[in-house]
Figure 1 (cartoon, rainbow over the protein chains, first blue to last red):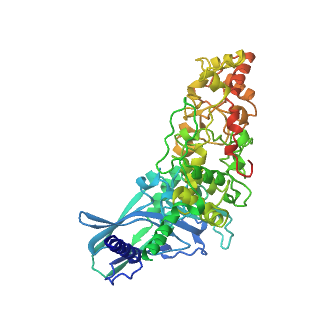
Figure 2 (cartoon, each protein chain N blue to C red):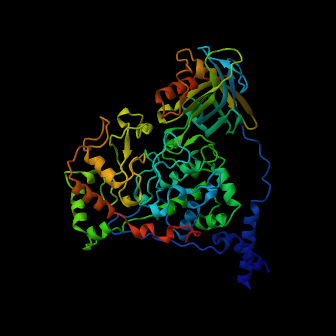
Figure 3 (cartoon, helix red, strand yellow):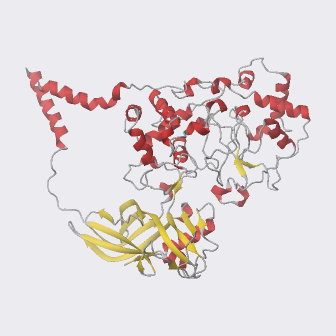
Amino acid sequence: MKMKIVNNYFFVVLLALFLGSCGEESPQTPKPKVHLKFIPTYNGEPLSIDSVYTNSFGQQLRVENVQFYLSNIFAHNGSDSTLLKQAFMFTLLEPKTLSLNVSPQTFSSLSFGVGVPANLNKNVDPSQYENSNPLSVQGSNGMFWYWNTGYIFVKVEGRYELTGTPNAPLMDSYSYHTGDDPLYRVLHFNTGNVSLAEGDARTFNIEVAIDSVFNRPVDPIDLSIDNLTHTTSNFPLAERITNNFVSAFHFQ
Amino acid sequence: MRIVVFFFLLAGILSGCAEEGLQDKPISFKQPHYFPPINFPEGNEPTLLRFELGKKLFYEVKLSKNEDQSCASCHRLPAAFTDGRAFSSFHENEFARNAPTLANLAWSPYFMSEGGVPTLELQALGPIHEKHELSLSMEEVIDRLKSSSNYSALSKAAYGRELDAFTITRALACFERALISGDSKFDRYYFLKSNDYSDLEKEGMALFFSERTQCSSCHAGPFFTDYQFYILGLEDADIGLERKTYLASDRGKFKTPTLRNIELTAPYMHNGSMSSLEEVVSFYNTGGGTRSTKDARVKSLNLLKEEEAALVAFLKTLTDWNFVQNEKFLSAEED
């Protein structure tokens, strides 16, 4: 009889454990949120994949695809740093605001890497990640090299023509796929003092001025020469595109 | 009554351990004692169902865009898992190369022509995604496979999780690690002390391991490769290792291939430009290719015709007929 009672209690405890996950959680004050909104532009105007732009060589171009990884997104308060997000991928054709649930905190600057840091890049198996992770096989969405493993940090692709003649068809393609450990860059942005309590939310707009890829004054890109790099095929150009691309980020 | 309900609950929870009656068990791969032990990656030790799932995937045409190609299209068992073609890509492209054999991949320190892939598991992703090969995203692969046959059940029973990129890559790697070849006439003579070796074959073996030819300085060890990269001097558009390292000094460097089953893996060289072993031996004997940067060991050997023939005879003793006729490596449809 005693044994039967013990068994019944054991059953009830087990059942409670199984059913526990089905119950509603008690209402909680929402965590503070930080939203990072990336705004692609060209010459200060919202970037349009249908628009034709002119670079500093008078060549006409269209931007059809922009994808990039950001990683190690940190908030800084003096010498204290809080990791907000390990990795995020921006895709021009499906732009998403990065929304982060954070702990109540104060910070004065944000930083992130453009690309994927060395410890997450080479020799890392993307199949270990859940599909929802942007570093996973499915999440990487064409931003991983399988013949020489590592992530493509930045893709900028489109079409161009060299004459600058109005309404001339853009017959040729340019394609920049940059990535590899030496091309990882970290950017810092001052935010001013930001204090986030429970329930607070702050949105930061970050302009990504794609014209900087082509028209950065110290290193403009001549599409008649420099229209293709998948990094290994032309590492010097990949380095130039990387440096131009990171100069495109402006904290608003 | 409550206790009965409890047992039903418990049975439901445990049912995932034996999907649809599939029972897995550890297996070991038979390997020669003169090969070093295999270091299996943690979590992908060989089991019966991992091997079976990997084999099923290896021969699965649903992995290709048009459902007409599989891994086995370029890696055919009778050709020691090569395909007999100069280039293996389905559409010729700048980096098309001759298909390598898959024999003894379990010991390879890295994969792909430039050695840019660190594990066999990770390598499996390449041909699936490569647009000149199977050309399919992993998302599409999983969608196709989940709706057909018993892939999901095999995946759960073999790895305890739904079919996904993780289980697909691990199962393919498990199957490929089983492709062990070390039972050639040479092995039986050299390691097992058989007497079945002709004078010509012995002469060829002596030449192969000699200072004069230095063949074995690169085609070294039990796998007949040192896995390093060298310039033989062949001139073509393929930049070789430079593609990975960006170093001009690596232009035209290619990985030393294994010579096991070499008789069955023609045509030869990274670009499939030589159709016979006689042609390859003659190429080395006459000093290799024309690149000025070629390896210093690639120089005229002054071998007589009879010596060339002896080297070819020796190379043909590296064929493992039991390997290329092993029905365990064939798909169920081909058994």
